[in-house]
Image 1 (cartoon, helix red, strand yellow):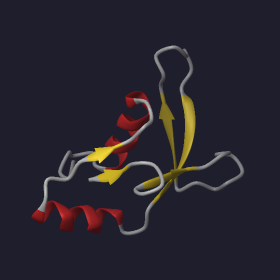
Image 2 (cartoon, rainbow, N blue to C red):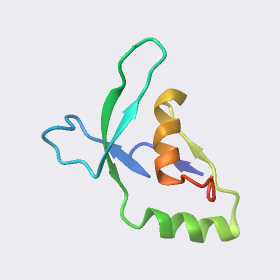
Image 3 (cartoon, rainbow, N blue to C red):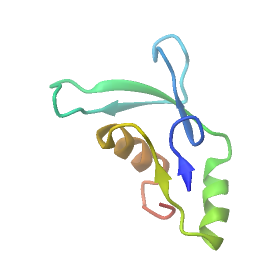
Length: 83
């Protein structure tokens, strides 16, 4: 089981000045415009997930909203191989 925030990724404070690895649009249901979230991806995350998936059922959790988590999870694992 992996925690999304601070374990798999880190959401930067300011996407324009903090030079994130990727900027992912996050669409919240109560806001017509997506939030452009700057995300730093943990180094070697794909290799870690590949190895963990060989031996375990891999689960990701977060205290954040699902609307926030889903686009990030889809970016990390676009083919749904690991989660």
